[in-house]
Length: 253
Image 1 (cartoon, one colour):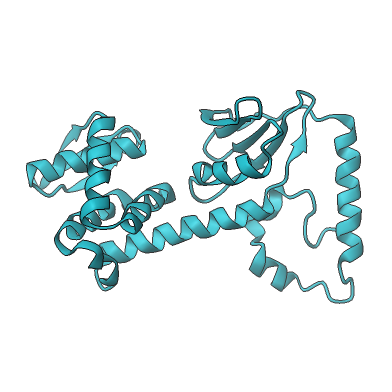
Image 2 (image 1 turned 90 degrees about the vertical axis):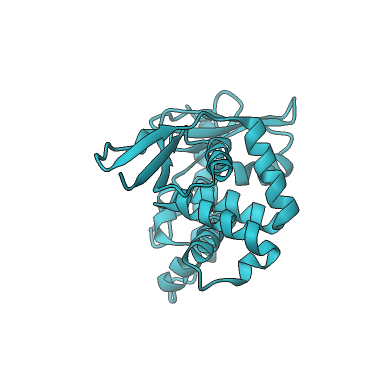
C-alpha cells in the first residue's frame, strides 16, 4: 500500500472535516477527492470521512488564529475553483501554514502555496466578471432569472452582491453547468443555494422580449461600426461568456 485516499461529500465543511481528521492523525494522505469522483485503485486504501460542521469550525478557527484570515479566504476560494487536485494542495497549504504562520503566502516557490493562491485568484476574477456580465430576465412568476455557466463554483460569491443590489426583487441565478441555483426572496431578504435542473428555463413575460430588443438596439447604436474591436471586447468580456448575454458582441441586429 502506498497510502490512503480520503473521500468526502463534496461540501466545503466536508473537506474541512477530512483535513481536520488527517491533521489529528498526523499521517499525510495520498490524495483527497470527492466521493463521487473516486475510482478504485488497488494500490491505495480508501476512507470516507463524514462531514462534521463542528470539526470544520474548529479547523477554520485554527487557521484564522494561527495563520491568517487571508489564508482562510484563500482556502475557501481555492476550494470553489474545483480544479483537479486542489483538495490535496489545500491540505499541504494548511499544513505548511501551521508551521510558518502568516508568512505562508510569501512562499510562492512552494507548489501547494502557489496552486492555492492561483486557484483562489481565478475564482475571484471570474466572480468579478460575472457580476458585470450577468443579465436578468423577468419571468411570468414575478421572479427575475439569469443563467450562467462559469468555470468555477462561484454562486455563493455572487449572493451578497446581488442580494444587496436587487434587494426588492425576487430572483434566481442559475448555474446550468452544475445544476445549481441561488434563490433570493425579497420578502425575507434571504438567499438559499439549491439544486436546479440544467434544462430548466422559465416562461418570460411578453414585455421582456421588447425590453431585450430595446437593449440590443441601444448596444448596436453605441457601437462604432467602423471600429468594432472584437479583440478588445474579448479581452474584457471573454467569448465563453457571450452565450448567455442578451447582446452578443459581433452579432448584427
